[in-house]
Length: 220
Image (cartoon, rainbow, N blue to C red; front, side, top):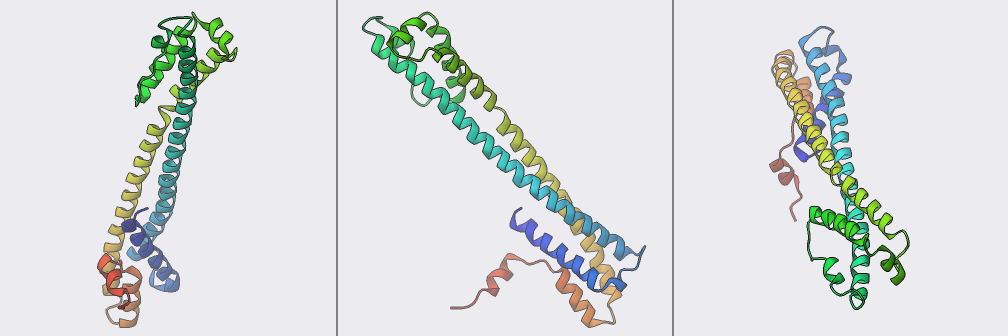
């Protein structure tokens, strides 16, 4: 929830409190009661959408971190095979070229490289084991490939959900602001002959601006 939404949310909370304090001024079936019902609905929507927004962002970060972990696991398996191939090059000339790893490769290139290493290593499987790689190195490599491939899509889905939650949050705030504008006119007439109550209403419905926060700062 950004500061623009937060300030409007704070205003809606004060307006709800005003209704509780001056409940007699919001008679059933009145325009003011109906608009305050909207405000209260909006407060619930903001809370839910803000939670979804943060939750989806958290999910996206979790999935992104999971992707990085999966990528690193795959990279370690690939590097182990590359290093071992370097040691085997004296017995198998050119094998180090078959298992070469370029720097700064993309996710797609990393995935393709893992698959290539898995396919190429089949011919030398027993030799890799003889030189010291674990008996399950190809199975472990395949598992790392599968895990990395699976990790590549969830972050985008989570971020799409975050965008959707943000859009819904904006729509809720817009509905609340329309209800507030309607109430501004209604309450001005309602409290025309009651300045004290009108001041209380203006305080409740006021939306703080950036400049006001700066003005309120103490002077050194």
